[in-house]
Length: 163
Image (cartoon, rainbow, N blue to C red; front, side, top):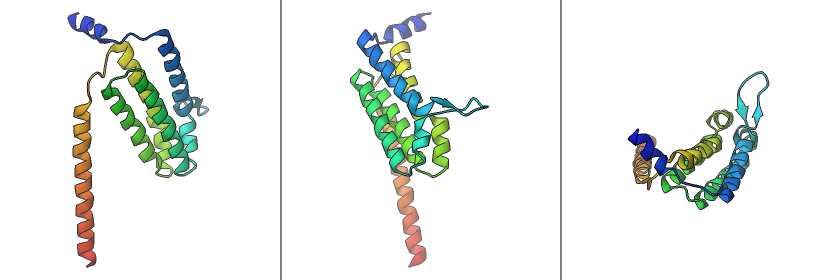
């Protein structure tokens, strides 16, 4: 019981103005990720996978819109940890979304903007995801360094084989 009480106390109170703005964010996210249903299925999709049919440009446009949504959520006081997770969601969606066909299917099933709205609700309503996010940044840095080292090693081996 004490844990539940402590968990509820951590939830952030939000005002009427913020509620209206967050409802707007949720509507935009729904349009991007889950507004429509494929007939005869329960599979939902939005404008994001449709825009990915326009290579690079469509993914760039939806990434910018996602970035604007994240920035708007940041303006309403979400924690740095939530912002980092949201940026990761949007960036992963944009990177994989660029891959023809695979990216479109990824957009349909991953739904980064809906995930970001879920993070936002968990942050405000349940008091989750508080903190600096430094641990997440450390993991990202280690992965990036590992990928860079692997790419460098691969290029080294390629040049070694060629020359």
